[in-house]
Length: 86
Image (cartoon, rainbow, N blue to C red; front, side, top):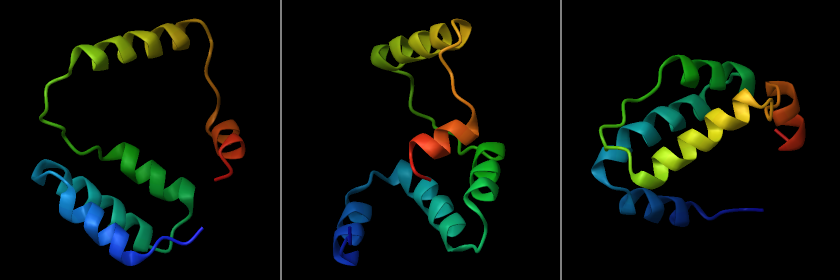
């Protein structure tokens, strides 16, 4: 599926200012000639600080995720890539 660059430009224009740096960092990673594993390892090793407070919805999602982890409902990175065709 091809996405016109104009659509991407509009999406970037619509982003709130506090998300621009995250997008810039992600795009820089995409432009590098590294494997998806290398890219994600770097992104995860250097997270961008999000200064927005957690919402009640966020807190519910975190609690659900922690419960999933404690009950073994997780998948390895290799399984995730295979299941999501990465």
